[in-house]
Length: 296
Ligand code: MN
Image (cartoon, rainbow, N blue to C red; front, side, top):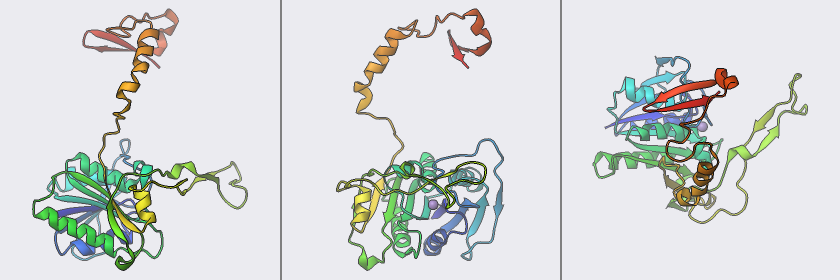
């Protein structure tokens, strides 16, 4: 069995190596991780600059280790497409310092890396411990090892993404394990002016986006609720962001646009006429038998 480990806290993060130490006895472990902290970059991939990669000495003996000057998702792409050629049985991102709950999964670099592996059709785990200090990695590491062992028996689906969050507690203080839904929570709703000197760097004001606590009571069954109850939260994720319940109720948008656009109906936009003075700011795109113009 071969396991790829990555993270968004960077190559030196203790959570990554706690996991490597636990897993090396049951699998061949390869670490490919960003060279620096990349928390909050989500599924971001680097498209406009080269990605440098180098082999480095591991912090746990005997583990093939690479650092990537890029994002967590870059690390997974490089690992799967170039270094390891898809010969991987499981990808784990973590152990992250700090929880990845609710809507924060959309900005989480840990979950972003996991999604990249999931897009490649692999079983994937994103694992986080809900604290930034005095971290307990033992239970999180053991959970990953147990799932990896089960995967090796061939009795698990070939593709899944589990977002696992643990309270920062030793095993005996945890109160249970729950399969959960994403709750309501977002980092991005707390913006503060930074610094003691009224948030000014001498030139202009600056701001910090900060962690915020979810407002109101979280419903039972959500990941935020589970953590609050000192339970381990396991949320299966997938990448379909389509709002299926709105497919019908949003038909009014189509109806409105069909009525209001100058050449609605079949072949919408086909007959837009070029006004003379628009000529230099329109791009022409030929597609099959239809001409489209983009206003630029
Ligand atoms: Mn992180």
